[in-house]
Length: 263
Image 1: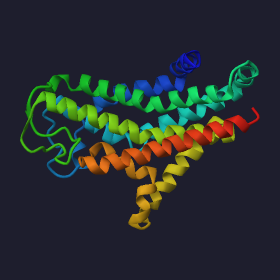
Image 2: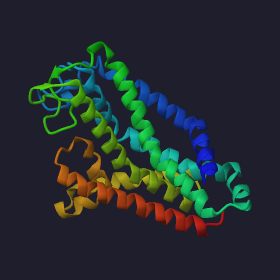
Image 3: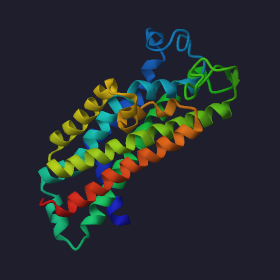
């Protein structure tokens, strides 16, 4: 299993789409340090003056989690199957004495890890971009709680770091089901473009379902893209359980479909 995981991670970081995604997520935070209209994208008075480098991770995640990060994740997870089918490398692998379940499970583990990789580079780029503003104690908020960027007073650097770390991890969990879903579509279609398109179309349809009754909203993956901004611990616990159930469900379906799929 460790050999398969090592192989899949090598494939992951060797893919050009992944390298592009890592470069974009690393460099994009540099834009927010001098974007003159950034304050117009938030509630009045919340983002007009960035006073600390601890605030940039929230800006970066907020601006990318709705579209950019899901797109990168969908393409990568779909490519894990589609690219190998196109290059003819998946069938020879399955001809070896390797359990199919272990093969797809290793791909699933790498796929659900990828959101955290992207968020790590986003966080790294944000912290680099925030160096001129510093990371000391400041008057304001990180954006990862109910007080948003305005805050409720003075925030220490240690407290800010914990908020940023917690928000980044929550954002990663909210993106895990997308990776598992894209992998499932990759198995069903055996084509990168079709699987990525199906994943993104599913997310768009879910976003359109915002007009449906409130009772329907908790089952939509897109309802959890703001999980990193929520501060109520009890509600977050239920949300995390549901997201993990979605991830495990899509993962199980991927394993079952791959076991029966003729590649």
